[in-house]
Image (cartoon, rainbow over all chains, first blue to last red; front, side, top):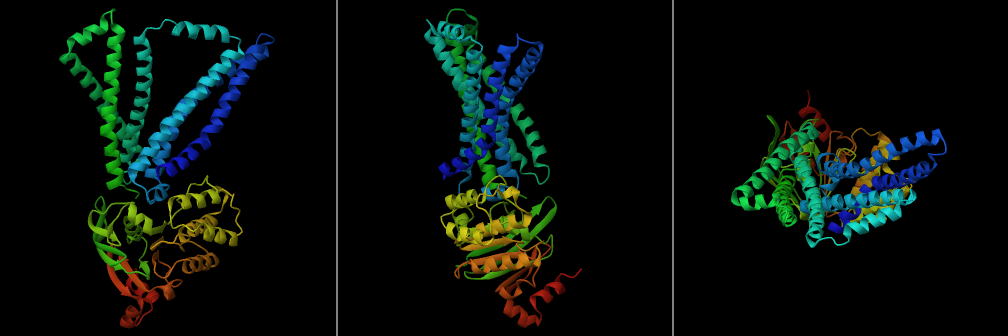
Length: 263
Length: 231
């Protein structure tokens, strides 16, 4: 059943996202064209400024919009009339939630890929490809192993942090739907409370590490071996994010399975 | 074993007790009217049976099973409002139901859609309210379910459409299935009801076979309803 849910959840999200991807690429191409024409007249120079602004806006829409769409999709399925269909399907609640996580992360990855493609078009169109490519090549030339590990850890941290962000929003909606009126307002309120607890959890956990291992905290300030220590810190952060997400998600599942309130 | 067994179910919203110790059973092959005025708790009861709400106390079983994935396979439910994704076309909705419900008869659904002269590629959002309701009904009645639960399927509909809906309901469910239908428009349905459940202020005030009730009270169900619920 997960495959079937994914099919419809992806269809539903990409119906909105694909036009945004297309608009992003069109605005990128127009930005490149106007940038190349901007020296020929004042009109093109003015249009170029406007197009650059549009470009920045569309990139923001791309990332923020993707996140917003995933949250909206979850809200519609558990707190509105659309839930009458979703929640009478012969499917476990945990399967529905899993589908929302998978589609949420995948759509964000595709949006980021589109953003990178757009940036590449901009670089190539402005004739800066060779300097860009050599800059990248120089960065990776003789890169220490610790730095490679750091890049990998940062990527993993970004992915787990995004999943955790979705988990916090999903729990907020699960709590908000318990109310009979103003479910959206209570979801926001629940989000604020969970966010405060979430921040306290990280502050307390990191402070605890400082108390248990002051040598590790000092090693972060040392120039020698600092990258290795920062990598350990990233690994700890990844662990902490995974732990809190593993606590939050079963609570969401429990509420939606045992306390669904499509009143 | 009863097909549906609702036992001492109560439900409150805050201080407002919407259902109070509701108990009844539905056997196989019965058409049962869930009758009561607006606000009597009909929709809440139906949502509880469909696992969209949770009871405060009591239990609900379908074919002896607690509510869950297995009972959802047995129930085909029509809510009292538009619950489908308006951006989907008719054919997408048919495929959606076919994907999730093993008992969905897509050919039957296409045949019924064809009789309405609807384009399979038409989006739900471009349809009138009445046509959307007919599409929803077709989807629900095209399942070969054990229990059909229809919440106010003929409420707020013109008499011609009402005939279409009643006819679609009665000609598309099998003999061994049961139908629980909530309404306050009793005269249109009285002749087909085997049993009735009268709900008043969240309590079952009368429950049983329509023939026996008529015999006992010497009133039609419609007249009895008017008598029981007069303001």
